View 1 (tube, rainbow, N blue to C red):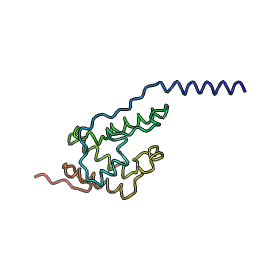
View 2: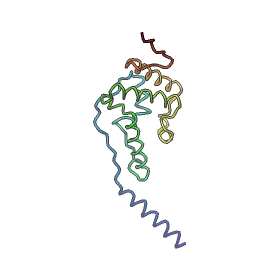
View 3: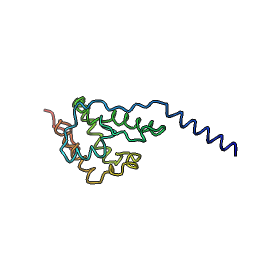
Length: 157
């Protein structure tokens, strides 16, 4: 019995101690949002914004270690892949790569990540919403002059 009490006390001390490890939870300024129609923006804001923008909502559990470490890491990683509120910082090549990645992760249903949808059920995307995001990303790529799937190169004379 003493061993169990000691182990529980030790675990409690460790859990309290890890709360002292600092975790960066920042929201840098929004410098330029992605140009998207209202329907697409609504989907992005509901399902992607917390990890792929500078307007992250930091819920209470993002302040409790060790979950706080995972949340902060997911946000940092998400912003590194695509930041929809720092869009003006992307040149044509970078924005094309982000849009290409949007298409890829939507086709494979890899986003939003399951851990996020576990807590944020409203972030789950329907097949129609995925298709809308894919169509939008393809439209944006075409506007930027990116080659489209199935397009053939013009013969050079």
